[in-house]
Image 1: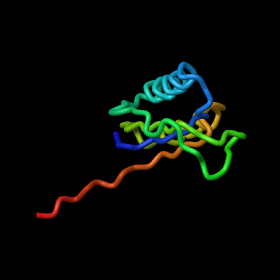
Image 2 (image 1 turned 90 degrees about the horizontal axis):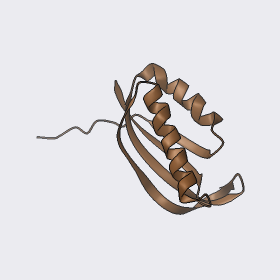
Image 3 (image 1 turned 45 degrees about the vertical axis):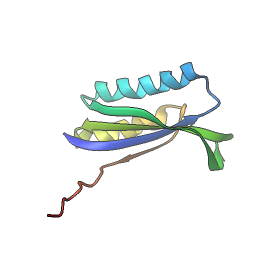
Amino acid sequence: MNKYELVFIVDSRLSDAEKSDVSKQVTDLVAKMEGKIINSSVWIDRQRMAFPINKAPEGTYYLFNIEMKAAEIARLRRELLINERVMRFLIIRPEEQKVKV
């Protein structure tokens, strides 16, 4: 199991219930792929974007720290592309911090 960071953007004009529904969908998707969510949070509640995405000038950013098999990441990407409420997403594998002694 590798550690990843998942950031995704939803339209900030959605109601709080709709935003939490999208977050729950992503959580269920990770669980379905035998992944584990270490931490999840709303990173930025309302952020004006440099350019509108799907005619939305502002977005709500979510940050998930997850553990998942590397083979399942491509499947997770495909599922997030299909979800119309997820405007953009990014999955990265954070570098491990090396401690200098």
